[in-house]
Amino acid sequence: MNDDNKKMYLFNVLKGKWRVLIIEDLFTGEKQFGEIHQDIKGISKKVLTDNLQYLIRSGIIEKRTYPVFPPKAIYKLSDRGMNIKPILDDIYRWGIENYTPFAEEVTDEFYNIFQ
Image (cartoon, rainbow, N blue to C red; front, side, top):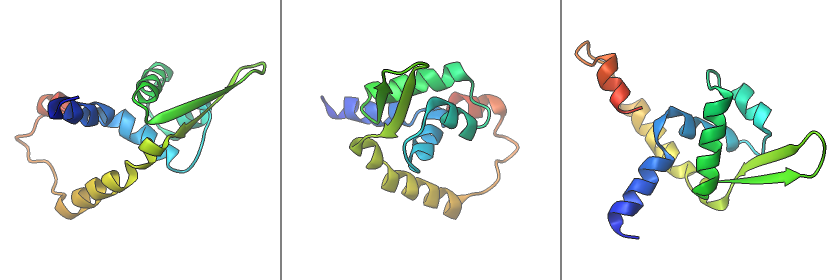
Protein backbone atom coordinates (compact mmCIF):
# COMPACT_ATOMS: atom_id res chain seq x y z
CA MET A 1 0.00 0.00 0.00
CA ASN A 2 1.53 3.33 -1.04
CA ASP A 3 1.51 6.45 1.14
CA ASP A 4 -1.45 8.00 -0.70
CA ASN A 5 -3.56 4.90 -0.05
CA LYS A 6 -2.56 4.99 3.62
CA LYS A 7 -3.65 8.63 3.87
CA MET A 8 -6.96 7.81 2.21
CA TYR A 9 -7.47 4.98 4.72
CA LEU A 10 -7.24 7.45 7.60
CA PHE A 11 -9.52 9.98 5.92
CA ASN A 12 -12.10 7.31 5.09
CA VAL A 13 -12.09 5.91 8.63
CA LEU A 14 -12.71 9.38 10.05
CA LYS A 15 -14.97 10.55 7.19
CA GLY A 16 -18.04 12.50 8.24
CA LYS A 17 -19.36 13.04 11.70
CA TRP A 18 -20.91 9.62 12.28
CA ARG A 19 -17.80 7.43 12.18
CA VAL A 20 -15.97 9.60 14.70
CA LEU A 21 -19.03 9.61 16.98
CA ILE A 22 -19.37 5.81 16.73
CA ILE A 23 -15.70 5.32 17.55
CA GLU A 24 -15.94 7.80 20.41
CA ASP A 25 -19.03 6.03 21.78
CA LEU A 26 -17.21 2.68 21.80
CA PHE A 27 -14.29 4.10 23.80
CA THR A 28 -16.54 3.49 26.84
CA GLY A 29 -16.74 -0.25 26.12
CA GLU A 30 -18.62 -2.85 24.12
CA LYS A 31 -22.21 -2.15 23.16
CA GLN A 32 -25.14 -3.59 21.30
CA PHE A 33 -26.56 -1.90 18.21
CA GLY A 34 -29.50 -0.40 20.11
CA GLU A 35 -27.23 1.13 22.72
CA ILE A 36 -25.07 2.81 20.09
CA HIS A 37 -28.18 4.02 18.25
CA GLN A 38 -29.57 5.48 21.47
CA ASP A 39 -26.27 7.16 22.40
CA ILE A 40 -25.77 8.89 19.04
CA LYS A 41 -28.63 11.34 18.63
CA GLY A 42 -29.87 11.90 15.09
CA ILE A 43 -28.32 8.89 13.38
CA SER A 44 -30.69 6.64 11.44
CA LYS A 45 -30.50 2.87 11.82
CA LYS A 46 -29.45 2.52 8.16
CA VAL A 47 -26.64 5.06 8.48
CA LEU A 48 -25.48 3.42 11.71
CA THR A 49 -25.53 -0.02 10.06
CA ASP A 50 -23.60 1.21 7.01
CA ASN A 51 -20.96 2.94 9.13
CA LEU A 52 -20.57 -0.02 11.50
CA GLN A 53 -20.06 -2.32 8.50
CA TYR A 54 -17.43 0.02 7.06
CA LEU A 55 -15.59 0.26 10.40
CA ILE A 56 -15.68 -3.53 10.76
CA ARG A 57 -14.22 -4.00 7.25
CA SER A 58 -11.58 -1.38 8.09
CA GLY A 59 -10.48 -3.30 11.18
CA ILE A 60 -11.50 -0.51 13.58
CA ILE A 61 -14.46 -2.32 15.16
CA GLU A 62 -14.99 -5.99 15.96
CA LYS A 63 -18.42 -7.61 15.96
CA ARG A 64 -19.18 -10.65 18.07
CA THR A 65 -22.45 -12.47 17.40
CA TYR A 66 -24.26 -14.93 19.65
CA PRO A 67 -26.42 -17.80 18.35
CA VAL A 68 -29.53 -16.85 20.33
CA PHE A 69 -33.02 -15.73 19.44
CA PRO A 70 -33.47 -12.88 18.95
CA PRO A 71 -29.98 -12.50 17.48
CA LYS A 72 -27.47 -10.67 19.65
CA ALA A 73 -24.38 -8.82 18.44
CA ILE A 74 -21.83 -6.89 20.45
CA TYR A 75 -19.60 -4.21 18.93
CA LYS A 76 -16.27 -3.14 20.38
CA LEU A 77 -13.17 -1.32 19.24
CA SER A 78 -10.32 -3.49 18.03
CA ASP A 79 -6.78 -2.76 19.17
CA ARG A 80 -6.39 -0.70 15.98
CA GLY A 81 -9.55 1.23 16.90
CA MET A 82 -8.30 1.91 20.42
CA ASN A 83 -5.10 3.32 18.91
CA ILE A 84 -7.18 6.14 17.40
CA LYS A 85 -7.97 7.59 20.86
CA PRO A 86 -4.80 9.68 21.26
CA ILE A 87 -5.23 10.99 17.70
CA LEU A 88 -8.82 12.07 18.37
CA ASP A 89 -7.79 13.54 21.74
CA ASP A 90 -5.22 15.69 19.91
CA ILE A 91 -7.82 16.75 17.32
CA TYR A 92 -10.33 17.67 20.04
CA ARG A 93 -7.66 19.59 21.95
CA TRP A 94 -6.71 21.47 18.78
CA GLY A 95 -10.38 22.30 18.18
CA ILE A 96 -10.81 23.68 21.68
CA GLU A 97 -7.61 25.72 21.48
CA ASN A 98 -8.36 27.10 18.03
CA TYR A 99 -12.14 27.40 18.01
CA THR A 100 -13.63 30.53 16.54
CA PRO A 101 -17.23 30.83 15.35
CA PHE A 102 -17.71 30.37 11.61
CA ALA A 103 -17.62 33.61 9.68
CA GLU A 104 -20.76 34.53 7.75
CA GLU A 105 -18.92 33.84 4.49
CA VAL A 106 -18.82 30.13 5.35
CA THR A 107 -22.09 28.80 4.03
CA ASP A 108 -23.86 25.53 4.68
CA GLU A 109 -22.98 24.50 1.12
CA PHE A 110 -19.25 24.96 1.84
CA TYR A 111 -19.61 23.10 5.16
CA ASN A 112 -21.41 20.19 3.46
CA ILE A 113 -18.46 19.60 1.15
CA PHE A 114 -16.62 18.19 4.14
CA GLN A 115 -19.40 15.94 5.43
